[in-house]
Image: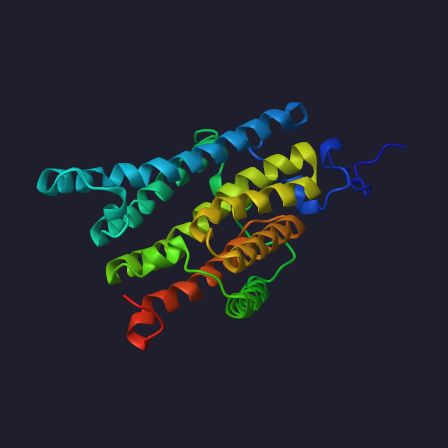
Length: 287
């Protein structure tokens, strides 16, 4: 007997999403018009190329931004020596400002890749939202607590383990403008851009091709590795950054969304940036 009553049988997920939580079923990077025919290895290659492009931008854009000042110094005082530039307050300040266009160009790169040039909605596609079952207020509170725990661990590790001043310390302490510029970048551009690249584009691409475990370890180590140069003289700080990286990636993996990782990253950087900005006025550091 044929009836018009709707079926009560549950709809099966596509084969490629079998065994994954429900929120993963609607998420892929970048989504394809025909998900069944999408090649995860091509997505992996695209994800790696996007990450590599972000690293190249980070290397070259600040240097390009600093070229006009370099030419000015050259014409006024002769060819500057590397050690002189390393202590030139204006040069260091301009180099930090160069991170802003770097991040803007990186954001544009991510937008092009994720949306396939305006074919897909950006924020939804990249998973920049709370998990479906999570109350945003409770989720935000939990993220703030997680960031607080990471900051407390970082404080204990760096104070009891110690270590030399890092490259970032020297940049921050070179001048008040450099200090404020560093704080600005750390809050207003770095958390968003870094999460989009690492836990947004790269993580989802690796997870689809190689699985969750490999994605967690690969993304966490790559994120920590990119920051090693800034903290090369201080193993304690490198340890804290690695812990932060694994935490952010675990949160991304087990929530299936990017927004929780972003909030933790934002709060973590925000507290440190506040300390950086206020340090000279409270005697916490040299200017």
